[in-house]
Length: 130
Image (cartoon, rainbow, N blue to C red; front, side, top):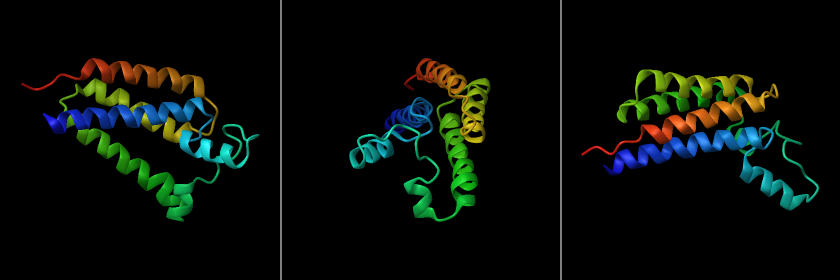
């Protein structure tokens, strides 16, 4: 039961994070707040080319290709453990994959709607096992 709750919370946090990226011009909220602390005139999305994680990893290939694939596999494992219907898994993974591929093309409104649909799917999918 505890693992199931943790899995569900994991998916909610992950998809909320991605929704926040669409709302803040492709920028992590925490990164944006740190930049605004250094420069009060900083606006979301002004400098998203190099993130702290990307600097730490020092490999654009790992950052842009390996991490997203590992993340998607993690989502699938968790959704399978939670017994999500196949179509729900497909919608959630397609939204994540679409955002990963097109995140720098300024289609934020489309992904905001898509992530709200994902939240609806997530919130209506949780059923505690007895």
